[in-house]
Image (cartoon, helix red, strand yellow):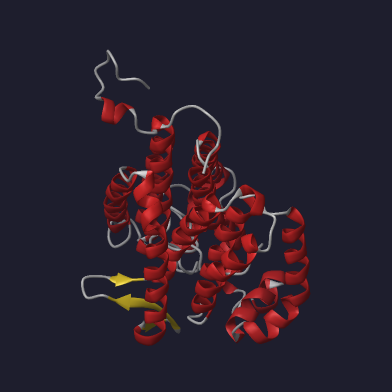
Length: 375
């Protein structure tokens, strides 16, 4: 869209509307689902959902203005600050629901592990963009990044928060893959992980986490206990059929059979009322957003921008994929909300940081001279 000679101001015309319009539609649809989850009321979910989106959209717009050199300069300090905040959680963090994940800063309650998801992507993008291409296949390209990923993962696992630790690992691994590390290293890592999985299961996971993993394979065995979440979610999704029961007519959520209908299982709440059609709409919008993110990464004129955009897109994808697999009983219940639809400030903040970073890289791409990929 070009504003020259037109009536649309240039600052408005140059925004990535092919991503923003679908995003606005998804957030509005999420607000409608949250309205229904509250029994036909904007409070307490839908109104705060829209308010948070507005606040974090402003934050994303501010991120868009950052120049590349300043972002690279602030990368490592940002990593250190968030790592210190994670250490602070272990010492001073608030305990809620059996987990110690939050810091009370007085003016707000912060979950530092959420910040680490985009920060680890930013950190590894900076590392690999400054690493000579000839050293990408050396052990130096693996050892330090592995430590950068491993330290926050270990701290998050102590909280304990398996889902967030996996998200940090996934975002970091994608950046490493995009940076050109040998594929055989990833295959070897996958084989090693599979071999160590039994040890991790029995000695690394809490008892409730072990139950969640086992429940995934046979939720009906304990349908009123460990398998209750997945069983009720599948009932809600299946009962929606093709066209759904109708807006604000979901019995599973209204009669409180479906646990967490406004957060982790918001997709099941939606599917019961809007059916397969609603589900396809949600998938289509996420596909548009993710495809746009990949396009931004592909069009980047330097290595740092490309890795940053690819990693941020992967972070959003992880949220979407794990949540949808979880509500359909194909992954353990790990507390990963659905981006832009679930009620939750931490999730909205993380995903809007990713959107802001992608918009920032998109802005860099427009200003960059045509040419080959550089550092």
